[in-house]
Length: 217
Length: 222
Image (tube, one colour):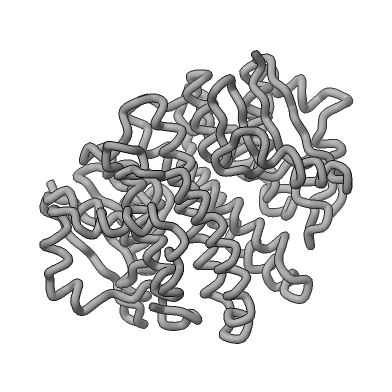
């Protein structure tokens, strides 16, 4: 029974799932498809023949289960690894923060796919807009320690990764958001993630976005 | 106390929730924000920050003490409230479909709200991909009749609305497709059938997107 995550050799929309898998401590295959002619040929050659209903990247294989869509994958892994809220009241908060965090990534993606000059032009407005949203998120998270309070959940990893991506482009991004800054530290310090953060792989680093974008990070 | 669903006076991201509420035949308040200067002022200057929403935005849902924004969060909540949720074994599969539909909605949105100069190319690109996606919908739904088989779930209302946006954008893409049949089946559900056939059906007057978008999606017009 093997657990495999397939995605481009990028962070982008696959890294949250990788964090959930690293956190869990289970054996898993981190299949990375290179962003090269070979990689594209490989992926587009097999995309429709590996048992995926709605083929895309990332994809997850867990025995007979085969799913796509990063959020569906994250929710599946969360339920599997005890990172999904159990209290009914937490479900609404969880869903809202999941969608807010997703918006952070989608809006960031919309910015970085613009051509260099449009990107430079759009960057200040993007950062202004996102800092306001970050402030709201900061207020919502409060003293935590986690997004949903006492219990770590998959949305902590979504906030961690997607805020970190923007922070790479704008190092001062979380300066006005002390609760979020604290959350980033807390997630980074999780004992279960230390093997990863001390690894050669982490030191080598993975680009956030493709090289053809205006910010690959 | 009736559920309150607040959104602009158009279809967009709010309509799936409205369709679900109509199907559920529950008492609900259709708190539309008029697309007039007055309406927009009343939203931005007063209501937005005084409703007790943690992330003030449209659409929003208020159900007693529960106050939600983010359309996906709203749909999942209404699904749970009215039992329109998949069985445990089917959850992952339905959530994949939920996200697939959001991808399509977001792609179409980018085209409709994009630059005028890029519109024709963007439109052609979108329509080019649509045929394959509708094939995938066909494979996913199979015999159906609904996304989760015999059981109607919240994603069917997202599918009905977001795929209908695509059908209005590119009617030819939907001709003689299993996807169109699937949408017809959902539209034929009792309370929905009445809605679509009524004289006051909002789809006869509402735009799909903002009237200021590059492609607003006026009813019965291209």
